[in-house]
View 1 (spheres, rainbow, N blue to C red):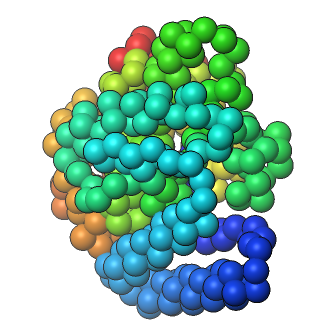
View 2 (cartoon, one colour; view 1 turned 120 degrees about the vertical axis):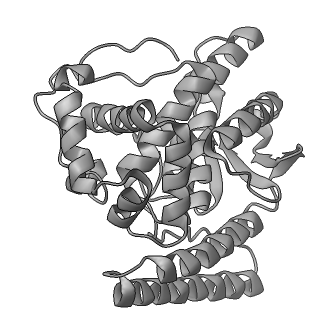
Length: 314
């Protein structure tokens, strides 16, 4: 799962000591100021370019990631070549597994999208769904197993959702059905496109990379009758009544793009968005056709029945 680019959710957990509370409040005010600046500059130039928004978004993402790292400075941690994993004591036995899974995804996912982030990336491991949901004000019943937002990958401990107690089985299930590859791909898309992308695109790319790396595919929709319009699959993505269809359609769009034009075209599209082009400009520049024409081609070429069938492993 990914939170929409440009949204700002700031955890307001308490800290002991007045100085820390003041520091936390200062960070929150500063981040909110950055968000306001982001919205204003993006709005002024929206009809021509997304460049002002991509520049300010990158700054805001770094600030949020830094703030999150400061918030979790007291957590236990493990470090690898490309990641810093922070976790609670109860997950000490599975922390190496999570870090190993992230490292295994780093090279192939980065190579597929043609982008390698600099520095070590922060992963937070949450012991249960309630603690993960609490970070974003969601109900404890929220079913997300992972979230990418603000330069940080958050994943749910396998202790919460893997029923087996056998360590080898837990490892096998987590590596193939866990959220790490999916959420790490969201991070790559976010950084390469610099926050300038629709929700359907990042969800589709994340599923494509996840399928190639682990063989995992999300279930389709057994009640799909028609494709959603792309204009409804960005800010309103989470409100679409058939979430299984929304995710399956997102992947099928990316699959269609890659099959027709190749993975290099997908890389070029993300790079164009990262340079500040609007989505329609990026499609015209890279594919030579408008976004509307691409959508028409997809709906003409891919029957909605594809949303209802089980997919083979990647």
